[in-house]
Image 1 (cartoon, rainbow, N blue to C red):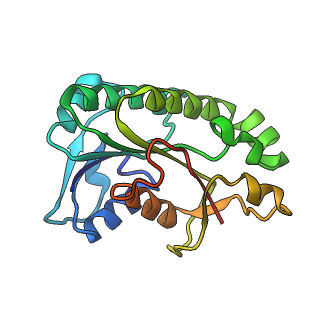
Image 2: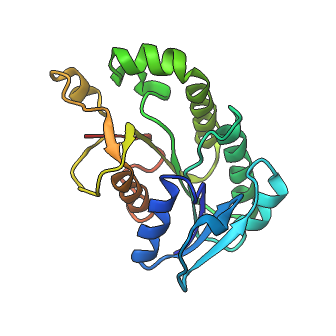
Length: 211
């Protein structure tokens, strides 16, 4: 597929780029500084731009089969939501249907899955603006008439890809003796996101991800 990855130079985005290329996709890495991807590949091209500029996004999306969003917060608490709004607008204008978007465990109706630390200290206080941004981002995607999947990973680690993690509705795992670790490697998250390009199991759903 011809993929465009927004947030391609972030800590998750880099894993997405590498794994997508390994799977044979053609990848456009959209970032303010795409040159920071310090390797070359015949199926990779960088695209400089800012997701907060709708014209920049509109031009970048054209000609792609699918879109992956792995945006970080940046220095503003609206980067994910406003950037996603521009991406969805561009997709709809150009008839691109497939979107896989990274959010966070704890967003939307997954909040009860969190333990006390993540629910009340991290997302209830320290990272409240980030969670508000995730919730606004999800609302934009869910309203869009496109084929979307929103993945909600737990806290990132730098571990290797294992392929062994819980996904989907994690509420039973959370209640079952607190078996969720509330962690997952970026490599495993990237693998899951890419799998959604060809698997409709979670079409228009919001699966959680955690060890």
